[in-house]
View 1 (tube, rainbow, N blue to C red):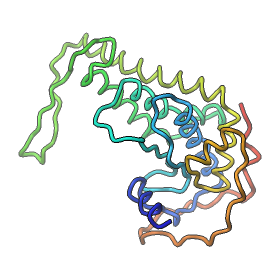
View 2 (view 1 turned 135 degrees about the vertical axis):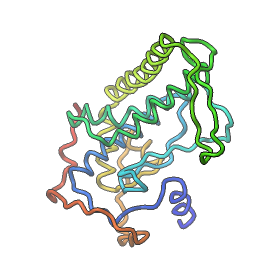
View 3 (view 1 turned 180 degrees about the vertical axis):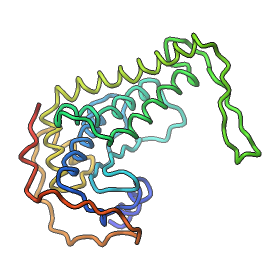
Length: 248
């Protein structure tokens, strides 16, 4: 519907259908996003999955969107830990199913590291206890730039780095265990993404349960949004890649 289309545009950014992507890139993106989507379903305390797509939106080649069921002004530690694991899902799926790493996980890694550091330094959610590290100061006359003043010792800085790494690594290990156990479901999600390009939350649950999706409707191609010029990536080949997706 038009309302759904408008909501997705606000939440996820405009579709960039004018960008031509090779089949190999699509396959990588499908595996990556399937990793995020799978974890969003199986991790307790995670927000429900709303939609997963391999159509480029904004600066991303693919996107997995979650929406909370209720309005919330605070987040529990368990919810933040679930978010860390979900952010690691794309990289883990690439490692397990493609046997290599790509730069597609750079934003996930950056967000996970930033989230873990806030858990340690601002919210007191680590083994260092309920302490705050680093005062934030606003430089009003410099465009409200926020600078961080270091008010802790070098030995404390080392312990902070250790705790940040531990939180991210715990999320990585937790995510990898789930993906290893549910690898068949991840393959089904990735194949469906290559075929349909967009899946909603109900379809992801259906695929995880092993229920085939109804035949995709043959809708006319959508006119690309906007008039921005995008870099064109020529397809390497046109043969189907869905048959290559196998469980590790």
